[in-house]
Amino acid sequence: ANGYYNSRWTKCIHSSRDFSDMVYIDNYIFNKDVVVQFNSTVGEYVGYTELGVSSARTWNNNPGQLQQERAQVEGYCKHNAKIRQSAIADKS
Image (cartoon, rainbow, N blue to C red; front, side):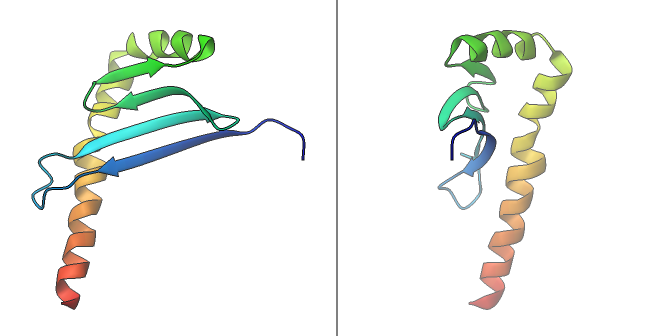
């Protein structure tokens, strides 16, 4: 089908058992191309297209939005990873 596709994918990545290396990634995608991304290691948005650069500039100038994204490592990633790890440990 012809058309345009927007999506947003978030990921939590870690390899340590204590989650000390946890990284939160928030991708904004248009037609399978990442337009703008927040990576908790970088700590701000990075644009990969003309629209993405403009959006990143705007969002990076919003302290509340940046604070909310930065908090996702603890509030979303580590929180859910601990729940999953506990569920797996209880089954072994």
